Each structure stands twice: as C-alpha cells, then as structure tokens.
Length: 339
Image (tube, rainbow, N blue to C red):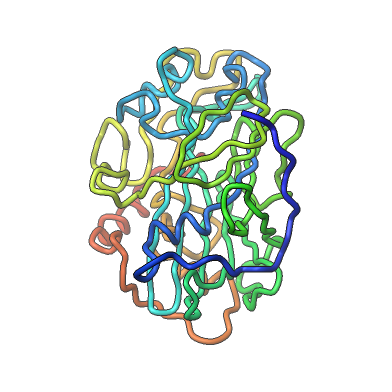
C-alpha cells in the first residue's frame, strides 16, 4: 500500500461526528479513541523475521489459541500478520475507561547480553470523562512499557500529577481514514515497550497503524499507512472468556510461552511465561495492584492523577468484577511481571 505523509500533530479539537441513532456503543467509543500507533521496526537478525517480529497481530494469528507455539509459528508460512488490537471498555457514571492491548508473537533481541521470550502484550489505558457529549473528553493515558507505567495528559486536560508525576503530553493526530483526532502512541522495536509519541518513535524502518474496521497487513517493515481492526476482550469467545484456557494462559493474566525453537539462541536467555494480558499488567513500584490498570482503572486514576470534580468509583459495567477474588489471589501468587 502506498506510503502517505504523516498528518500534522495537534493537541485540541475533540469534536467528532455523532453516530446515527442511539447512544454511542462501547465498540464505537473504542474505535473513536483508538490510538494512531507508531511501531518501530528492526529488520536485522534472524529473530526479526525481516521485521515481522515487530508487527502487531492477533493472538491466534496462526489459527489456534496455543500460546506455546507462537514463537515458532511466527517464522512459518501460512500465518497472518493482519493488524489487530484488543480493547475493553469499563464504565462508571462519570467516566469511560478504555484499555488497548497490542500483541506481538515475539519479544526478541539480537544481543547476547539480553533476553527474549515468546509472546508480548503491552498497551495503554485511556480515561474519558462523560461530559454529555457523544464521545466524552479525553483526560489521561497510562501506558505499559515492560514493568513500568507512564502517565500522560493531553493539552488542556484538567487532570494533573497525583502520586505519580505526569510523564509528558499526550499528542493527538488526525487520521486519513476518519474524521477523528486520535491519541498517538508508539512502541519500540524488539521489546515493544509502549509510551506516548514521541517518547518512543520510529527510527529508520517502521509502521504507522491507524484504527479502522479493516485489518491490513503491512507491505513491508516500512509502511506508514496500515489500518488495524479492534477486537473486544469481552466478546463471547474473546480473551477474557479464554482466561482459563491452559494452552493460552499459564496463570490468570500471564500468557503461556515456552523456550522451544530458536528462542534464546545467540542471546542470554529465553524466559518462559513472560507476557501478560491487561489483567496481569503490573508496575510493582506503584500502589495499584497487579492488573488494576485494566480491572479497576478508576482506582489507578485517582492514585496517578489529581482530578477536580466528581469521579465515581462504582462501575456500571465491569465484567472483571465477577472474578475479583481470583484476580486478587493471582496478584498475590503470580510470578513477577517480566514483559
């Protein structure tokens, strides 16, 4: 597909066309706020697969829900690197909280002094204030970069630093595929830590992913206009429904991954069971517990930010709530986050 020039970065202008008919759905809300996503790509080294190891894709990109064959299958023919990302929406009377997960089959390296592992799941939480408009107002973002979280606010946000200092400004960018201004995120190559653009950026080869209802496959490791499709974590056959699938998860919130194939060859090590779903994300130095960035984002928000006005802590929609006891137990017993 043709490479297009990046749209100008902007920090204001939240108004977008209202959907026809009834109030906005969670899917519409997730699509409206989904990030424009800059993915740095490294095409060198055998574990890079010519850049494909840095492409975002579905967890079942190879046609199955076995997390322990993804490293090997990524290098085989007949698999799909069509661009997808996962989302969940939680609701209170005052806010929407949208979590996005970007998945890679490999967290890889070409350095003998570094480690790699099968599967990689990192992402971002957006807090949207319900102000009576169709899509609300974006107030903050918290991103996941390995075992650390980073917080951001867009220009003009009323939210400021709380227990955690705001790490930067969340930029917005116009999409060539819709009328929306989207937050802009970026992931590094190889390890795929995620921050707000331009704290990470494309260096040389890279892909710019745009939210859409279409899943496109990059034409190469240097494609600046690729559409990605969203998948609901809470779908009837979605990731949350698969949480007890022992082929996909080693424990509640941790993807299953082994050290088969050439994972770890030429590097320090290939660690196992090292990638996490949103309900397993954790910044061990911060007060919110493992997974609460996704399962109790109102709690995380009041810890991370100083928020004027009203913020309800009571959820009107939170499918994670039914597993609260199991999530709390996993937070105490699960191995340390590695991702």
